[in-house]
Length: 218
Ligand code: E4P
Image 1 (cartoon, rainbow, N blue to C red):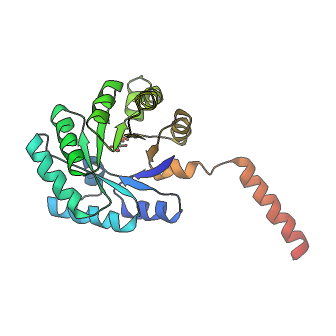
Image 2 (cartoon, rainbow, N blue to C red):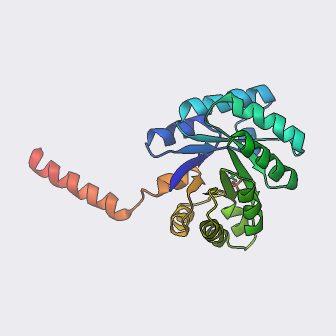
Image 3 (cartoon, rainbow, N blue to C red):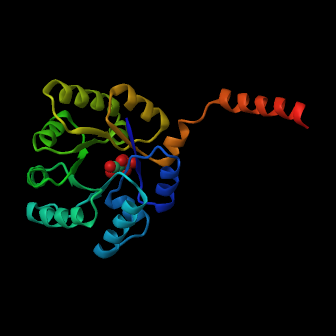
């Protein structure tokens, strides 16, 4: 399973990349706003800065919600850097735009997906990635991981090439559940990725090894 980091924060992206396990980055307009990045030109410079930090796919989301606007914006974003994947919301105009981008060889990430039916349309339009939002479904007492399982099964059954990119991951446990569900990618906060390292037996075992080493070496 590939790991993407779900942030527009350059320090966090650098830290995740330096861990040696990062395969890409996802951003969205809220994450860009959180970093205080405003204006089209600054957003574009920021996407290029992210692409220069990471050897992998970087999702950049269109703001337009009409077909022509999405096409214009998506083509401009795709031209910024070869790593850019154009992120498009799962609405009717978005599905049409994804089909256009697919035909042009521009890679896409269909975002804000909350049902198998939406994932089916994204795959039929040729999306490179589909982003089901796990945490936001859990927030409304639905089951985000179950949606990942259903989409993985549907894509396998019909042989769709669209990769399942589990998004809205909130915890380390979510990452493990995505692995079990067979997601192709999980995009996660850096803290959730680092949480995979935590085990009390690793901590206590290392302390014992070092203490034993000190006993005979001091
Ligand atoms: C990334 O592609 C999504 O936009 C992101 O994971 C959403 O996460 P959130 O539900 O925590 O805002």
